[in-house]
Image (tube, rainbow, N blue to C red; front, top):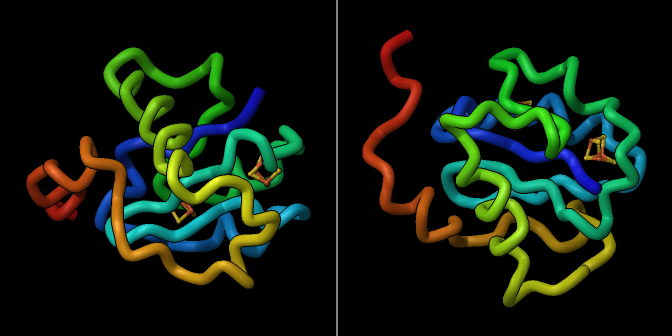
Length: 108
Ligand code: F3S
Ligand code: F3S
């Protein structure tokens, strides 16, 4: 099981979640961050600190953002399990689904 980062993170990337994760499994893409499904230990520390409430336990992802589960998982298809986001650095891509979105969360 894992936590998932959904639509409210896209084009926002507050990054407060990164500081809370004890296993450094929240990876930064171009427009969003992604939680590694195999490295996440379900501690839940990231979820309450996101100011835009983008983080959900996988069973609690709102229906409208269901696609973000696959986005978080598939983002790592060609990356594997680096075992640490800080050392791996920013990844110069997004999941194709997120890359294709128009500007998000810009009306505030
Ligand atoms: Fe995104 Fe929220 Fe983390 S906006 S970077 S999921 S703190
Ligand atoms: Fe890290 Fe959040 Fe999972 S703090 S271990 S990504 S629940």
